Figure 1 (spheres, rainbow, N blue to C red):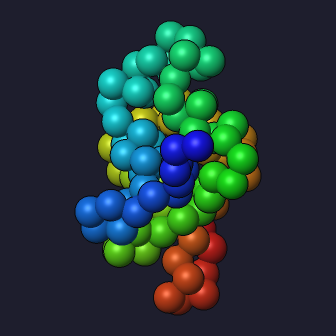
Figure 2 (cartoon, rainbow, N blue to C red; figure 1 turned 90 degrees about the horizontal axis):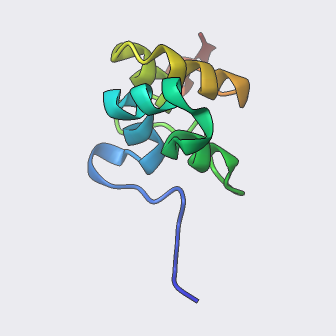
Length: 92
């Protein structure tokens, strides 16, 4: 069985979910057909961490909002993703 870590951390502490959340191409795909989107696929995976923070303490939801990916942000919010800033103990 191949090793697959859905929350694998890469450059700058980002996971596949961070990358998908901020992708304009995925934003367009999500708009066209939600179920064809890799973001949808990732969010359905057991063990996915929607609130994981990168090295700058940004969650996937932060990335979606910063890039203007409204549909991606909506998908994240529907999975109860949050804008968290743990270093300051504040949720946004």
